[in-house]
Image (tube, helix red, strand yellow):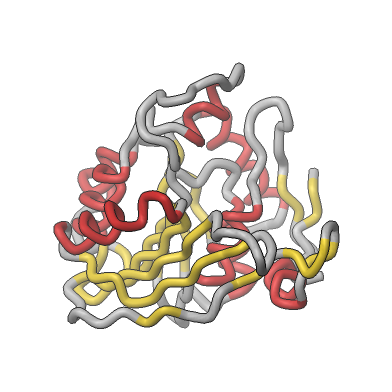
Length: 235
């Protein structure tokens, strides 16, 4: 069990399988879930994003969808550990079937920390769970966006963390699916390095207007986070 530094919550993880990373935490700080809204996290893994969003926002209910049974079981046990069964539901299932399972226009907000690497390119992970989380083996960017467009209510919001090297593809495919990019923030490990993450907000059926937020710098110096990162983590 690891402490989350939010509301006294903890999370169950298996280091030999897959543990959440900074990208999930940053996404939970970037996403906005308003009072009374229902949110769905696609590919929830350990359930980290629904748990953090429940702690940080006033959303009414959060659902995590995860295809790997072992990960879904850990996520459900973390929900129970924190006594959040009335606020968070963990569902075992395939992203590609999400709109059939939940119904069209079912959610106000969708979050996702999808696999970044196309297909099995460079696949070397000994753990299948880690490989599925990092590579587009069981779902692709197209699957995530097409299902999100169906699942979101009109003017519903989509939040994703991804890698900048796929940014042109991401923008094109979001627009093609009817999810208009509205807000973007690049994440830099150090101020003098290239960005290694991008946070994106989209609006289903939105007009064309993109706000680029100031860069988010992770480290002030080696081993020392910036104040913004400490704030997002809740330290």
